[in-house]
Length: 273
Image (cartoon, rainbow, N blue to C red):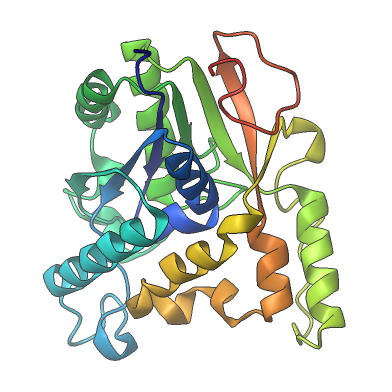
């Protein structure tokens, strides 16, 4: 019997798994591919009950982490993910937040220390495909934990030599433009906000566009599971038509490949099946 193919997604926080990879996690799980989600932090710097922000009176980091990990497990169930692995690091908060200075914050952990934990997981699961963020943390996001997750995943993949294919998530610029045009046509008022011309991933860098349209509803349910962070999840407030447009495809940049595969793919496992 052939060894079961395995997909591993490496993300920074509870809720990150949904938007850029929820569709592939659900799709490939349904196709019999083993799916592994690695979440690097516990989300301590998220909103507390009643929308209490980090640093405000009444914000309890440990309680927030417990809530967010409960929500993560519900999201994992909606997406049919086979294995959830928690690295257990402390959320660093957004760039410039006080949480950046905490000694235990994920962004302050030596890359080789966190990468060793991820190497152990790669050796255990033997992922054929690994997905994480690019060096900007995903489309220019710049969150310290996303950037650190990128560094750790790259280091672990290189050290282990296990993944046959390695990808960064992508937000195609043309898709961003279409999304905003469609939402304005639906009556959404953005005021004076206009995405910059360099927001997102240049289309020419995108190698892989995966149709996950049958999984849009499951992605939405998974995102809704992260109820405590609802105020921060802009996509949940979009019109239904726009949500389907945004969630129906997931894009990636193929960074390395040790099998024969087409330059432009509609399947991350092209060349492996």
